[in-house]
Image (cartoon, rainbow, N blue to C red):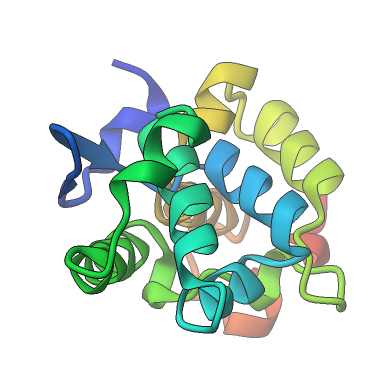
Length: 168
C-alpha cells in the first residue's frame, strides 16, 4: 500500500459504455489545469456552453479513458448525470470540495506544481508515482500532519499551516 492509498475517500463511478471509476488525482488536476488554465475554469466549462467538450476531457482524464473513446458516449440523455458524478468526485477528492485551494496557489489560481512536487518528494518522502496518484485531499492531510509534527503537535492557525510559510 502506498502513502497515497492510506487516506481513503469514497469512490465515484460513472456509466458510459461500461462502469468506470473517476478520481481527481494530482495527475488529473494537472491535465485539467493545462487544458483549462485552472481547475475551477474547467469545472465552469462543464456547466457552460462547452459542457460536452469539458465533460469529455474531464472524464477522459479522471477515468483514464482515451478522449476519442469518451466523446461519442456523451449525449443529452446522460450529460446531467455525468456532471453530477464529476461534482461528487470533486467533493470526495478535494479538501472542502474545492478544486483551487489557497495553500497551493501562486496567486493566479494555478497550482504551484514545482513547489508542491518538491515538498511532497523531499519533505513528505513520496515517490513521484505516489505524488501523481494522490488526491488533493490526501496530500492536504499529509501536509497538515507534517505541519503538526514540526510545530511539536501544537495547534497551528490556518495562516501558519500554509505550505509556503512552513519553516524548513
